Structure formats: C-alpha cells, structure tokens
Length: 541
Image (cartoon, rainbow, N blue to C red; front, side, top):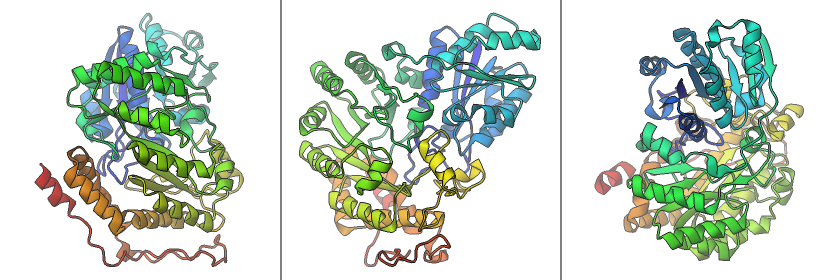
C-alpha cells in the first residue's frame, strides 16, 4: 500500500511554518521543527512493509499546487496529514484537494487539534475520512494494514463502518455517519519504535530545519513520550499522551546517537525534543554514562524542568550536553501554582546558577497572560530574566489550544479575543495573542513581549557577550549569525511591523486604572547600534 505522509503547505510565502513546535507559527528566530510525529508514523508504517512518501511542504516552502504536483506520481492509497490549530482550516482544504485528485485515497488527519476536537474537525469537510487521535503511529499502521487487504471503496457503507470500527484510536466518517472508536493503548516499550533519524535521512533535507538555540545543522528525536507534570497550558501531554510518561532505555537512545554519528556526519547537534527529558533521573545518568563510555562526541540539547541538581548537570555536560531549554514561565509563585507548574520560584534561580557552574547554556522561556498575571507579575518575570542572564530568553504570549485546561479557562472567563482558528497566528504566520488579561488587551500583551525581548537582547552587556561568543567560539558562530540576522528585524520593528508606524500602547477598555507599573513605550533603546549580522555572516562563510 502506498502511504503519503504530508506536512501541508501553510503560509509558505512568508517563511517556514513550524507546525510541530509547541506553539506552531513562523518564528521570529527562524526556528523550524522537524515533522517528528509525522516521521514516527511514517517510519512505523514503512517498517510494516508499506511504500511511504514523506513530504514536508512547509520546510521545502512549496505551495499547494506544487505539493499536489509532487504527489502526482505517487498516487497514494492513504494520505496522512499533520495539522495544528492555526492551520487547521488550510490543512482540511489540502486534504480535500488530495481527495479530489485521488478519490480512492483514504485521507487521515493527525495532530493535537483534531485529537482534541475530532467531531468538530470531521464535520468541517466530508472529504476527510478519519482522524488518528493522539499518538498516531500504530493507528495509521493498522489502517494501512487493513485497507491493503481489501478494496475499501467497493464496500457498502455498513461494511466500511464495520472494518473501521475495529481500529482503536480512530475517529471516522462514512456517508455522513461519524464514529469515535475507543482510545488506543499507548506504546509502553518505546524501544520498539523506529529511529526518527533514519526516517529523516531517507526522506527529508535536514538543512531545511533549524533551532535558533543550537548548532546547525541539527536533528530532533524523542527519548520519551508524555510528561511527569500537568501544566495547564501544555498541549501535547493533554491531547496526545493522556498525561502518561514513558521512556526509551538509555541504551536504545545511545544507539541512535551512535547511528547518527556514523551515518549523518554532517549533523552538529541532536535535540532530544521530549516534553521533559529528565523525568527519570536514573535514566539520565545511565544515558550519559553510555555516551561517555562509547566515546560519542555528538553535542545535544534537551528540555528539562528547572529542578536538576548540580551533580546531574555536570554529568550531562561531560556527556556533551551544551544547552537546556527550561520553562520558567513566571517569577511569581502564585502564577506558577495556578498553572500547576509544581516549581518553587527559588528553584529557577538555583537552576540557572547551577547550569553556569556546570558550563551548560540555558534557553529560558517566560509566558505572558497566565492565570493570575498582572502588569506587576510580568515585571517580576522580566526583572528575574535580566538577573539570571541566561544565554537566550523568550517572552511570548500565553497561547491557549483546544484540549488544554487553559483553553477552557480562557473561554469560561470570556478572555478569548479571536473567533477563527486562522487568528491563532498573524496574517504573515507569526505568533498572535489569542486572549486578553484583565488589565491588558491582546495587542498590549504582544507589545509587552516585544518590549521584554528588546530589554533583554539590546543590553550592551548582552551584545558584548554575543559578539565575543560569535568571534571566539566557532561552534556558536553559525547559530548566532543565522538566528541573529532574522531576529534583529523583529527587535527593531516589533511584531506588528515598523515601530514608527505603531502608536505606543494605550490602556484598553479592559485595562486596570492602576498606575503602579507604567506600560513600556515602543521607543527604541537609545545609544545602541545593532550588529550587522549579514556582514558578519559573509565574513564567517
């Protein structure tokens, strides 16, 4: 059976839409995630003996017409499309276009959005045959297995329904009748899944992917599924994993590192894209010992809670870990508690200090608009970020997604400011703010994030640090220049375009009259000359 796995084109005229990042968008830094869930599903189906075409139209920046042209010679029997909330209308249209071109192709959607809203999604267009809810690997493989043994389109309605009803994890529609099958038991032995790196090597161009905080080129794999925590904003644990945490063995993970080092020598760094890598500390230590014992030299980064001890950090550094992404989210303890972060604010400070002692860089993340946030709590977070001085930092709006507690919270409290899924990103694909705060409207939230980034990145101290890093650390030069030349545009102009065309933020009708925290204006920081990243990149090449 011929199985198409497609990352559908979306806003390719503006950049590379990063559909599988935790907040899908065209990013300010140019970061573009691998279609990792699509790759795992494709690899699992290919492993079962089916012919697979994995096509990433976003990374290749090819439009809908050219995407259909690329598919033309393949003539797929099943077509699996990845989706996201901002792109869901577009993704369904692409699925319908495939169905129009190949009427016998069985069209399946996967991803967080249809997993959260399967009934609504199927009702949007009868051309969509099914949704593989949650982790789609085995569900898609079973569809391919069962449809390969029959002439599905020649069956009558009742026969089709009876066959599809046997596939766990599948929601489907036949002749207007929608069915939702029981959830599929999740894979417990993750050592049985294919290496994502092998799928990438066969099907994708790794130079199309970039993570601003790490070396280039890099690849992204997973060592665990699910999360040990219950943060109210996080979409993947709530919609894909049923909040269940499972891990690959240290040996299996090290085996993939070894395979990458031998078979993909161009790869400079590996991203372990778990929601949390260190849910089992013993396994972290075992993995590091495997890397050290085998003499593997590959650098790597991963996502962790800000609770790791210095002993573990030092061992990770010895095993070539160079960067950690940590979701601090807020400096305010009450806000952290409301999002069920289970993180003492003091732990953030201790973690940042310990990573510096261990020699590991940190990309720290803060969110704006959390339950309990006010102008004062936002200033607390910015003050903390400036104090910690991590290698890179991001402030971005809380973006609530269907399936998460925060989405329900925002709807219940009448905080949503959008009425259409397309509005989850701006017209040119950038992150948008989809909620308001009690004392700040959605546009002010975005402006505040811009203000925080400028405060952080345009400090003379920080610019000097980055210039030194770029000149004297060759391994950091490419990532700094590649991310910097794009990011600098947004630092100068803000998220809404040229700042000279934007009025300073004003109090909205929802804003508090409190003047305890004056809202920052959009004026440029005086006395700073921004680096010429294009010139520096030419000199480096």
